[in-house]
Image (cartoon, rainbow, N blue to C red; front, top):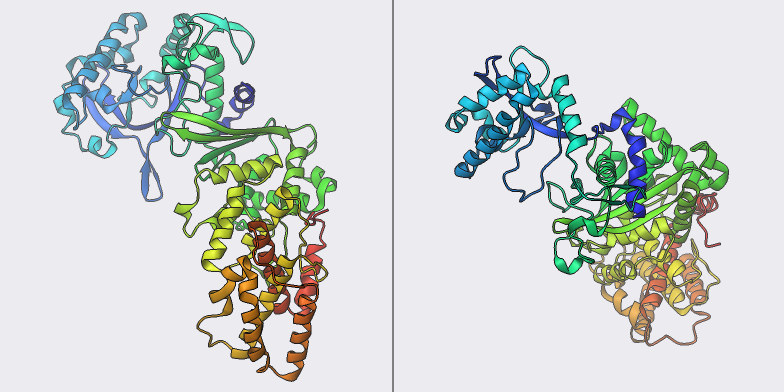
Length: 597
């Protein structure tokens, strides 16, 4: 219930901010595609397209209407003064007979309320419903375009919709207060005794879930029920609390500000918020999805976001002394990170983190310290590899194509990053499988390997080349890089198959079976170098081999990771110029926390 309580409290903040478009209690925002315009006497005038143009597309218009969306399978259950084309007009080319029944149910409900409302515009709608024939709907092309989209009513000559009349809104709100006949009980969110929700409103915006929404709290089988309680009475939440927490979560996942609150990682939809407006709330998910490689926008709004992001990156590099530059009171501002995954018509809570922004920033700094490694050879300041690689970049190293990434892996990695816990072993294992398959050791893969060895196995791993390290796996990784570079220097660019292409997998797993042969081949390559390079290369090989008494017969997976890092570090050193080394030394010494201390 901690999740529901946090969302319940968030509602008060969001409802006061007009940018979120939170609907008042008893109302909801729905996507309206068409308007039924009638004359004051109720005769039909026109069907108007309510969609708005967005680029080359037309999108349904968001309109505040009485009530909320219906659950699927709810039978004939017409909404009040709005609904889809089957209910409003009896239009559904695929289910014409059912469409007639739904229209009749809509008509009967509204005619029954006419005397109670006693309002001329409402009566005009009733007259329209009395005389409208569903066959007439199939003559209007607009319905074929909008499909079963939602529609509302409007009187010709008026600018507001019929349901927006003050008399109708007052009647609707009074009915809401009187109609709640659910049994009362103690709400597990607020602790107050109040009418309990039998069914909770649906959550929208969770990737992979039902488009119409899915429930986060629901019971549909007797085996899940207890003490004679049915449906959601097994998890008692008041009607008011259920409405507030679902409204707040829907605003984060499917509202106008969802871009700064919602992130999809694999099969996990992540919602992020703080308990008060903050710079970190504005930039955190953008940073999580793009890292420090976020594009620089040209517009004024993009420029503001870029400046906030740069302040956030400075805080990560400099630590606590810079936290105050982005937040007035980071120790007192709370953050919340909620991971959700689809499960048929329901939503599963994968993880939930809460704490202060200081706690979040410290865990981010720890993550980037654990995975921090020198970037690939070349001018580091111009290298495309981001200083702070995003989660998505790390995940892409686990599969040949994005569609093959293990769906649950994204949520597990983000959970480890934000919570400061161990990285999932499947991340490291998948990266090692990819290296064995394509023999590529790049910057993001090196980040994953180093992070796993440091955090999960508590191994000491350097940021850049450590010439004094004597681990056989690290040493032989370095040796393999030197042998490959010697081959390239001796034969030039006309090599069809390098020793990395042919021998990397076997050299990193069964070195005793491979390295004697590679060293014999190395002598032939060495002989083709000019004298100065030959001497320096032979000295380097002897320095690398000096602590190695014999080649191990086999390397376990973690040693294969260390072999890859030795190869990566040594290859960087071989390709990097003296100026590049100085540039990268400055980068690695920057106050970004990118060490293992």
